[in-house]
Image (cartoon, rainbow, N blue to C red; front, side, top):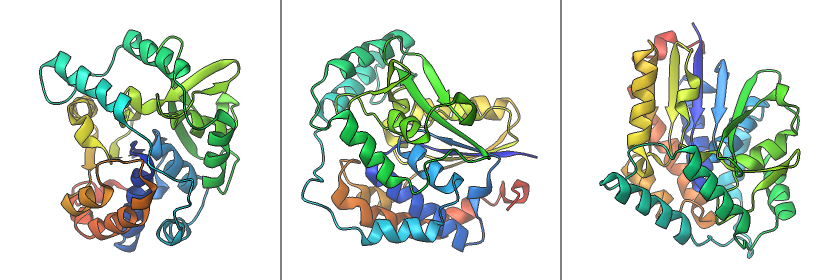
Length: 288
């Protein structure tokens, strides 16, 4: 029996919350980092890469709660991105998007991403990502990272066999449109895999058990609900963990706010105590 760990997007606070949660679950006797597949999108690509390459959770957690916020670390303006989500929701006649953007819509966003003037250069952004990854080589185990081709809106799933440097793969998955520049790989430019789906959990199809950790499910839970339904219809046992009330308060309104890193990590650690109980149904099916 195989299981997949799906780590969704959610900015710097999502990285922190996911790390705290995984660390707390490990302390509760449920180490999820031994999954047969680790699938990471955006923030989840950072956390997924860190744990898949063997960086200890305790080390990752300590770095988050102890790191000071530098003078250059200021929360970016999410205006254009939030306007896009609001427009998508309005098209669906609801408070949130009900379906994934089509490749045509993703290609339009890609054009916007390529044309946007961002405060951070591509070289600086890649350095930031490299600094977050203690190990820069792909692990032997199965790690997959999602990104979107800005030219045609197609989904790409990077893995060891892709032949792409690991830091570039992660940087492309974290290239939030309008905020960070797309990442050039083999002559093409890629943006955040979270624009297609905050989790891309449908890519875990074929595994018997799927655990989804979704920091920003509130921005697209209808899409996640559909992905979970697809997985269950195919016979998978699926469990989903999203931030609880205290965690949402710690994360705050801007998931890219570095000043909230420590609080988000601590909230994830605290939430693990109750989250462990929600995994009782799938716990017997995990090899931990």
